[in-house]
Amino acid sequence: MNNIRSTLAAVWRIAGPYFRSEDKWAGRGLLAAVIAIELAVVGLNVLFNRWNNTFYNALQDRNLDVFTFQLAYFSLLAAIYIALKVYQLYLNQWLQIRWRRWMTENYLGEWLAHANHYRMQLQGDAADNPDQRIAEDVRLFVEKTLELGIGLLSATVTLLSFVIILWGLSNEAPLHIMGREIAIPGYLVWAALIYAVIGTAFTHLIGRPLIALNFQQQRYEADFRFNLVRARENSEQIALLRGEPVERTRLATRYGMVVANWLDIMSRTKKLTAFTASYSQIAIIYPYILVAPAYFAGKVQLGALMQTASAFGSVQDSLSFFVTAYRSLAEWQSGVLRLDGFEQAIAHAEALRSKDDIIHVTPGDTGAIALDDLTLALPNGTPLMATPGFSFSGGERTLFTGPSGSGKSTLFRAIAGIWPFGKGRIAIPAKASMMMLPQRPYFPVGTLKEAVAYPAATDAFDAASMTAAITAVGLPALSGRLDEDAHWNRMLSLGEQQRLGVARALLHRPDYLFLDEATASLDEPSEAALYRLIEERLPDTTVISIGHRSTLRAFHQRNVVLENAGDGFTLAEATAAPAS
Ligand SMILES: Nc1ncnc2c1ncn2[C@@H]1O[C@H](COP(=O)(O)OP(=O)(O)OP(=O)(O)O)[C@@H](O)[C@H]1O
Image 1 (spheres, protein in one colour):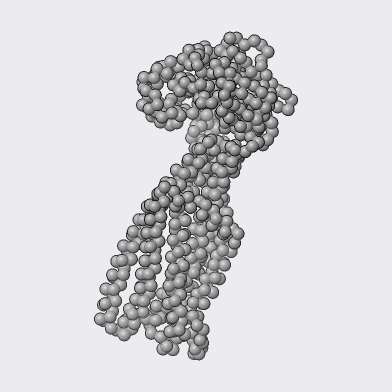
Image 2: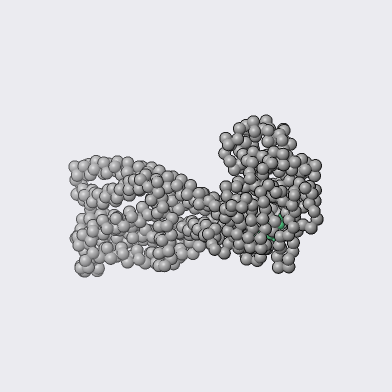
């Protein structure tokens, strides 16, 4: 019961915002239309049920006039029914795509806001495969919520309408057992109710494990897809290392999990289907068994018998809504859990940003980047690096050196405001623009213009300055290919990618430029040429670099080292005098 309550609360949390959003009138209007059509369909079903009585009595009485009239009446009802069904589906699909578009855009916004996507990753496995949650689970949620919500409404209204009819028919065709009439008011209603309660209880008992199994299935499928994508992205390395057999085994193991879980789902579904199929077959003959004695005793006409069977069927169908929708319900519930988990992970990542005991990055007014009582820690809390205070003045070029794993890149992440673990403050000059160039720059798949202008829009720079920047960094052959579409990370050598990264910096002209081994793949003369270019073209930019080569010292006025202090690393000025 608690489980149902918490699922419904989650559904309300997930579904509610759309119907309060800027698209609320379209959403509410479409939903109202779909519901109104569903109610009209139930009304038509009541008319069809009444039609049974008159039609079968006309057959029994061999009354051709009534028979012909009833056929025409049926055709009219059927025509209206068809039109309603067509538009119900059409409007439902329309609502689905609008709702899904809104939710997708909303999730994309929240996931990408304030580097939440990065912090979510740092928090480990809190929400596996966000891509699948945004793409697949949202679709499933919207589809199934409408299917089940409308289904439940239809079942309830059908139940109410037909219970009244069935109650009346119980009096018209009273229960006969061994030739004796037994007066139980509304006995057909009670019979349907008992049958449905037993069915629901067994269905839940047999089908319950499907919820967890469906949850796992979606996860395994997404993991498998993700690993395939990773193999595709790293195809060159895999080919060079002859890693195909390992990849194959690894992918087969992942797929093995998909299959193993699927086999469990199959076995559970088989048991559930055996039960639900038997249940619905018995439901067909059950009303005839109940009313047949009264019919054979001559107490009721064929019309009433047929109407009873049809009304019983409708009551039974609506009471058994849970039985027939169980598989959908199980899938839906696992989708709800996955979206709820995703929303919670986003909220957690967002909350992590505003906690007290994290690194606070604030705007400062000293014109320098100032570290104040700063401790960097790993996500598990282990301290990595600490410094009581350090500052980097504007215009001063600083080189960071230190052992691998000492926390140099993590310090850059903290200054960029995306590393929350640790404590202390980092003041960044107000309004200063910063750009980080890593060893492996990221280029979105698209035109060279988009790649080099990233993260600005393509039209932020004119073609002439882009061409000039690309030529200046030593890639003249690329300068004429600004409009070419490609996967640049895959196509260019790492050294070329690093040159293109520097071209990006030349275009953006940031106040602070952080180079995290951003030229490490180039030969020393080329690296020196790029540093000279930065000095010449960006004279007002404060350059802070991480690098292992001693030749880099020549381009920096200051050298800061990360030294081992026993229980972590600390920042210290290098003893050897840096070249100016
Ligand atoms: N997302 C993460 N989760 C857990 N540990 C991490 C994470 N990112 C970095 N670390 C750990 O933090 C430590 C510092 O990493 P960092 O990348 O800052 O080192 P670095 O000094 O830049 O090293 P290198 O010179 O090799 O680039 C490493 O031990 C690394 O394993």
